[in-house]
Image (tube, rainbow, N blue to C red):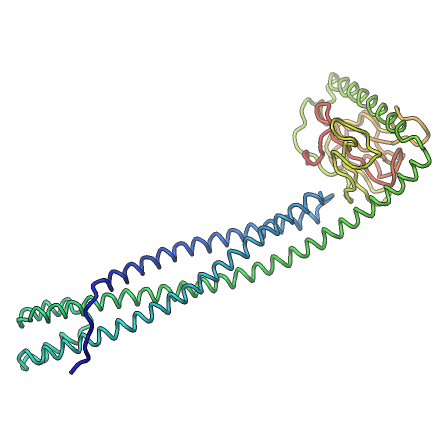
Length: 416
């Protein structure tokens, strides 16, 4: 006598189908998450590569690089979080798989018991001469076609018919469960593999980030040392002069007069057709070195006030070994080459000013006195127009590079 079989549940198949659809939707979402993680990793790697390239570039803006590294740290935290999320989802799929496997075992046992019960009923109720047909009916993997065939030969009782139909539903349920098991197992493996690969890639990115941080600290230390030296020299200079306010005022007057003279010369050369009205192209760095002071508001007392800034720096200071060649940032006409004619004293700043158009002028200050170009000379981009020095009011060898556009000093980095 077969073991008793519980009442058939018509919800089993619908639940299995619903579970499979839920798993399929979950898999689609997870694949989208893996794709998003891949994009985040690619973006992170590009950001790190650009940061390292910037650090290796000429005259890196260390403040901007430090800000970029801070942002990359946030991007790394985001990638880590996404990797942890994928690992957690893989663990959830493992639990889901275990649940489905249990349901498969239960359903397989129910199917076996129902088949055994149906076999006993048919053997007890029907002609033994039809045993081969019944055995085919009972052993078939799919009952649908066989049940139709049996209907031609047997008058199957309604209760037995219902049991046979439940067996067919059980088989459909098992097929659905097996499909869910396969999908869940494959997706879990895929997520674990993806997480492992992403972690390996992230580890490589972290190493590159650490190298970038080390290089940034090195450059910051070099810059700080140069600034400290300049500040010490300036303090000594102030102690010697004891007239910083008067000195700044004199420097401002000299700058204003020089600006007017430059404007006059540019207008004159423009009328003569020697300076174009527009400059096509971008500028290049005039010299490689360490940027010790950026354009804009500064905390250094030796810079004059401008607008809302108590101290304003009109250009970019680049420090390098004394005598390094200084090159034209672009093609143009030399309009100033020599000492600042409006400064007083024996230590005037030697400089070169190049008009690239009637609107665009570049300045090169604190040069050595052996300037190799002359006023009125046309120069090409990259041509040597001077050598780094420390003439004028300077606390150490460096190049002061400034860009004047439409009569106003602008950040030279905007024109590179």
